[in-house]
Length: 166
Image (cartoon, rainbow, N blue to C red; front, side):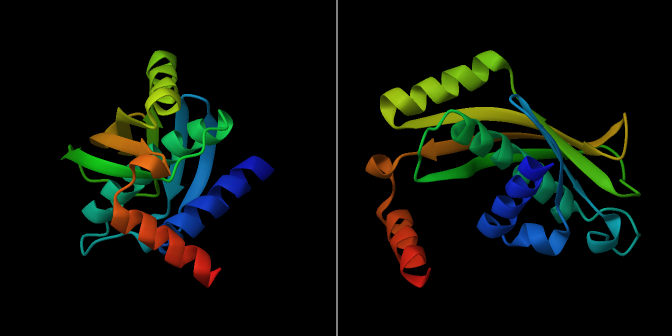
């Protein structure tokens, strides 16, 4: 339970929008992360989940999956970001909802190995979002992780400014 709270704390710290969305960590495994969010904080005018919240929860689940893999493998990177993402909205989501992101053990190992060898890596991840067995939405997204050696100057400057404020 403490691990889930620690992960939630990091998500809330690193991605402040997640706190406003009421994001909670449902479960974490080496190749799977499930996040959840309440409809009450993420509804649209039709009292179904807002499309932006659905996208955000899916992206957060993928980001968490990559970030946790790097933490578990003790690989230090400068950043993990989404490079691109495609969301298919298949049906309205009319309740509290969950996003499940996963990758295969082989994809995880390839990603970690690439960061260790090259200082950067890309992973294509899939996340499903819904209230139960039938997903209401599906995301396919590419995430990038890089060490400081390969970071864009503006990202490194932002990191320095953030440390100054701490």
